[in-house]
Amino acid sequence: MGLKFVPKVKVTDKHSLAVVYTPGVAAACLEIVENQSTAFDYTNRENTVGVFAFEYKKSLKRAEFLKNALNIDAVPLEINTENPDEIKFVVENLEPTFGAMDLSLLSEYVQNISFDIDIPVLKGQTDNLKEFFLCVSKNAFIPDLNKLSGTLGEQSLTLRKMSGGSIESIYTKEPHIKPIGVISEGSAVLGLGNIGAFAALPVMEGKSVLFSSLADLSAIPICVKEQNIEKFVKIVELIGNSFSAINLEDITAPNCFEIEKKLSTKLEIPIFHDDAHGTSIVVTAGIINALKVVGKDLDKIKIVMSGAGAAGCTIAKLLLEAGAKNLIVCDREGALAKNQNNQKSNHIEMANLTNQNMETGSLKEVLKGADLFIGVSAPNLLDENDIKNMANDPIVFALANPIPEIMPEIAEKAGAKVVSTGRSDFKNQINNCLAFPGVFKGLLKYNIKKITPEMKLNCAKALANVVSKDELSKDFIIPDALNPKVVDSVAEGLKQ
Image 1: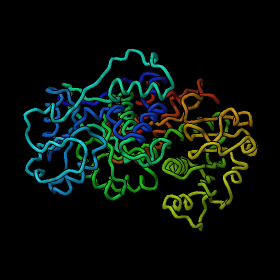
Image 2: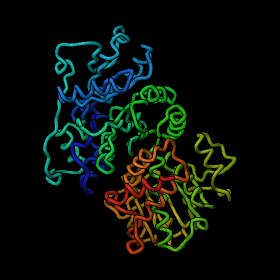
Image 3: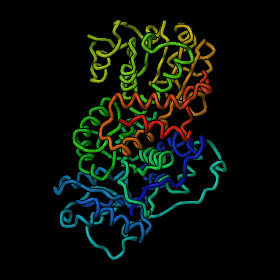
Image 4: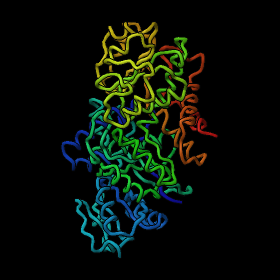
């Protein structure tokens, strides 16, 4: 028996996906950027309490009590330190996630700590827990999301304000499994940039909803103030025993790579940076099928990528693992090549791994004669002439959101044979929802601690195979994110 974290509103179709997660969720993020206190309106933070103990079982028992007695959505957290300074450091940095902190199980260690946060902190016993925490449970019954009016952003705000966010806990008689931690420091949220931990919470909640809705996995959002790599790693390490796995989310490159590497060595649970690895799996699956449509081979085509961040670097590496030979990665200055004065570690790595022909020049220049364009960068970088300058039957993956590097209708008019974007209102959507639920289901099912490039490639192939030969066409190279076959197919791709 134990707690399980579930959606207040399940994702069942494209509309609910758009309202609960992207693009609708961005509206709540922007509201919180303007006024931090609105996090209590647009997330479940007002009814969420972090319960700390030195043993997970004790924090879980306390969290179960708070749920049963007071209907508080308490999150059990094991903290792996008795040092008062470290306890203070962790608690203060987790403020964006919670409406209150319960440290009563650490009472003898925290009595003399003065916490610099604007939420209640319980250090011992109190006569009235409900009054102390000031928690408010909201869960409005919404029978039909289609009855919400306005833009997607307005619908998302209405839904979140009515229901108090999108995630809650329930008491279940099922055997308790530690939840997945969806953890961010808010440095690269969606296409909004570095909006910080408080404003990142709606997205982390939305991600937790998807874990539950698509793969029946319990997941909780954790937003951390600290953006320094070493300090962020330390915080996550100290609470790492609270989770069955960790999904790192919306962390800027190259920090995300170093954070993932460090945590993988410190914690004995799977660590997966979804913006990087999830995107690479789905993009590779789409490319596998797009190449079937145009009758070309991966090892014989020229590939040009715009974007050398988290997604771009991992996509490039997975394509090399899959057999790509002629791959050029571009940043804002143009093609990355060896012996350039590259400053970022991920740019140096990409320059050494790719562009074996040492091509130089702008994106538009190196794109000439290319068979495949992959954009994970910025809007409106390409025009009709750029597509015309590519090879015959070019493939265009313009994945910048919400505005792609080139609009699909322009690319198709210029001769693109297959076009893919990151948007749900266009065909061939590249959506991380196609990867991460199945990946985590497979990691936990098969007790896999670390995911390898070979495993990711197997997941991509498994995802590509969900589209049958009869279904495959230039307008259908990737399955829908809500296809019931997707999660199990990707999970089986991890089977060793």
